[in-house]
Length: 369
Image 1 (cartoon, rainbow, N blue to C red):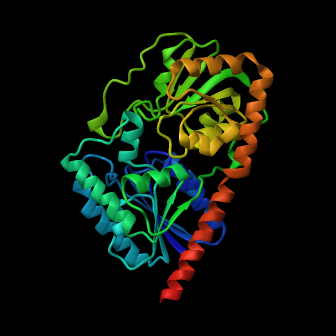
Image 2: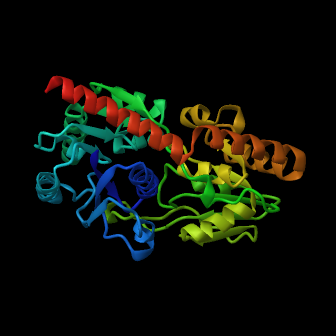
Image 3: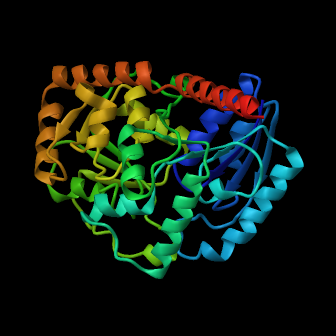
């Protein structure tokens, strides 16, 4: 089988694509990967070295959620269609909505990683006001979903949001994201400290909850402060000079692995999180997970996380105080998170589920033909 996959190089979709592409080619699938957003750095593409049956086409076309994406969409769609006609894949695996409507006769999967409208509702408590750009965006998303043979979401919560806010797909599937446990170290002695990873500019990640109260242990916050779309740049509201806080900025995968390995607690503060790769990475490093009490985290983590009251900095501070002062309780939650991640959220499981879906779509296409 030959799959053409799209990805973007700005957020977690790149990590997701790395895991999925690696697993697919090792299972004999030929992959053509086309990236959008920014040309990836050499560090971002190191994982491709030595992989058989992988062809990579990097581009710098804007992503559909960026406010100037309209200027790029026709050109990027034409480019992607030309690649499809050239390489003749059996299936399109599209990690952007806009290409679901691509005018080529190839079956396609659209993956709903996140979207602007569900983000806005989670962050602001209401749907965004109608604007010319929003009408364009919603039309692009709806058309992409409507033309997909299958729509995949990384959680049932996200699939339900797509149906509620956009349209019901012809076929909807939930496939949880996964990471390869070999990248993480769950076996070294933990420090009594808190780690949180997320884009500081993203109100959905809500890392500012951590800075609302003092904490009895060191807190490391990892993430970029610079929004990739200039329309959204502004004050982050994170100003603090308290000694327990360390704003680490962006970190390389190797640096992150070390931070996960040392931290005893991971704070999952998001108010919008369709899945959340960073908590999975922390769990595979045997961190105890303290999570915001939102439906998607409840779905993903169940009783394997210690939940704090939704969007409450005070409740988060209490949770950190409780786990950091009780070594046995912290260790219990760390083991629960580790076991759940190993059972449900590995790259191997993700790849197997996608290959099963690919096979089902290929069989259906052959029957129709």
